[in-house]
Image 1 (cartoon, rainbow, N blue to C red):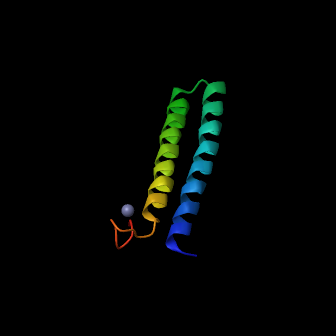
Image 2: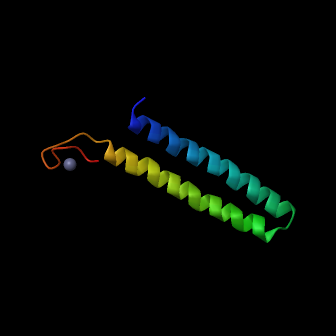
Amino acid sequence: MDRYRQTKIAGILGIIGNIFLLVIKAFVGYISQSQAMIADSFNSASDIFASCMTFIGNKIASKPGDSDHNFGHR
Ligand SMILES: [Zn+2]
């Protein structure tokens, strides 16, 4: 498996895992009235954003070379 495919899978798993954590933490924080748990669910939301940036950055970096970028877009 090549590096771009591995990084793509890592980005997708990061998004899925953090959506799961966001939902669980927000739910448990809400039913237990825990501000710390709700705040940590927002931290998971920012991690979803970071995983999206991993996914998008990897997609841009995996483009092959063209006339402006002879050695690819890495
Ligand atoms: Zn280019």
